[in-house]
Each structure stands twice: as structure tokens, then as C-alpha cells.
Length: 97
Image (cartoon, rainbow, N blue to C red; front, side, top):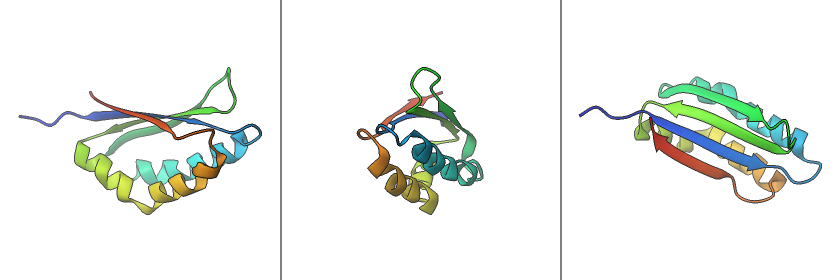
């Protein structure tokens, strides 16, 4: 049985006046995440209707690749840097592709 690829969509909502700082914090995680062996794509989008809403759209080879990603220093830094900028917790969904 082949393992299915995994798609992750994470939504981050900035506090009022914190959108640019949030974008910068997330952007710092993009290149190192793309460089991970298990990553197939990792893209950041900003809402055109609500400037403070950001989506990260990711595809990974496996659950193990996602777990590895969660342990990486750049991901841990993303969580630390974004926490004080957010309205609430990030909304993260993972599905089989």
C-alpha cells in the first residue's frame, strides 16, 4: 500500500495593525520549509479582501515529513514569532491528496 501525500492549509489572522509583521514572520519560514526533503510545495497567500488574513498551502510526501517539519527550528521559530501577532491560534487542516 502506498502512502498518500498530505496537503496542509494553515490560516493565520493578524491582530489589527500587525499584518506586515505577520507576513514577514511567515515569509521567513517559506524557503527553509521548501528545502526540506519531504516537501513538495509550500506557498504563502494573503487575502485580497482582508489584508490581515494569510494562508499557507503545503504538500508533503507523508505524515512523517510533516512531523519532521514540525520539529524543525524554522517551524518552531514561526510559532514563536507569530503567536503575539495573531488574533487567535492558527487554523490548520491536513488532508490526504
